[in-house]
Length: 401
Image 1 (spheres, one colour):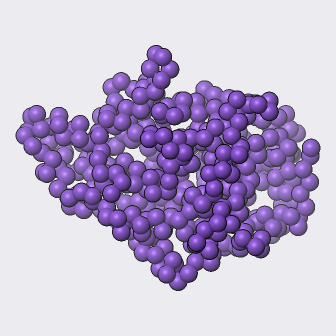
Image 2: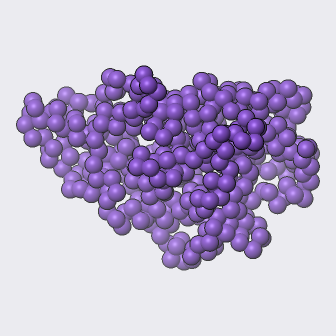
Image 3: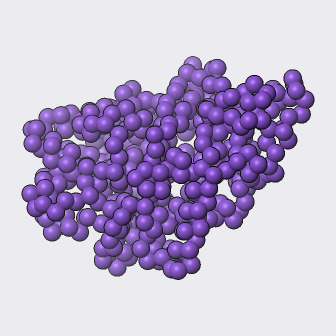
């Protein structure tokens, strides 16, 4: 059924979050904290941002293998918590029987491109790519805006949209992702990080080599230390002098509160009435061709003791489920996802990005849509069949997110 959206309803859709009572709450600038925080919560947000921007040294625990020395070195554009020009290289091995080896001990989770001076002195200036890898993908830097709201969405609301066997026959068969230890997961491109804390601790270890209470060991670094020790003796204390955990519980809690309280980006709506009408038309077409089967426009958080997270509606444009995207967008496998599966990318903030898809392979939204395959094939072909003006309206809607 063709969806009708009026300018009045669009006005209510301009906000990223709505409060529990249903009144819209405006976020005016990208990178702002959630509205409705207490003074103490706002203070912890600010302190967490300081840590997010901190430059770490080897004496602080950086490395010995790493990609960069601060969180905001990557998450910087268009504001702290945004994206950057960097990429993460991830590798895996698909075995002949179809099962997956994520190559954790070989560093397949994140091939780190830099080494500390102490490690360089031993002849190592980067991590070697796993020799047995059959699959490789480059992931660009994701936005971390609105992640506290994503964490606050009840698991049951996400699972309601699961349809792994496509029982309704619409060609869409989303399923939940799981972490390496089997927990329901909603974070990460492969939906393999169960909680926001997991996401933070995993990134700290994989990107900066920083251990934490929940991530005290790095299998790839330990394997490297064993190899070097056979030639140079015990080198562990020399190349990684900081005591574990290198991030304290207090550090993790501050980073959690910064990311938990970081608001979703605001919509980019022009003042011109004709442009607003085109965006409204594009939003209707977005639903009409079937994009909302996966890019679900809104989800609602559950009850929370934190008022800013309590029963809020977030314009996420994702179902947070895994979908088979076909060979066009294939990458690596995990223990719970095949190489053609990917978590539906949230589209909130899309208008603040200049490149698209998980690997930034295009700066053209039309091309990005046409590269969707697998479960999205029928939706892609409906988009392709639209008249040029309708396609333009749909793209203009996406640019407003």
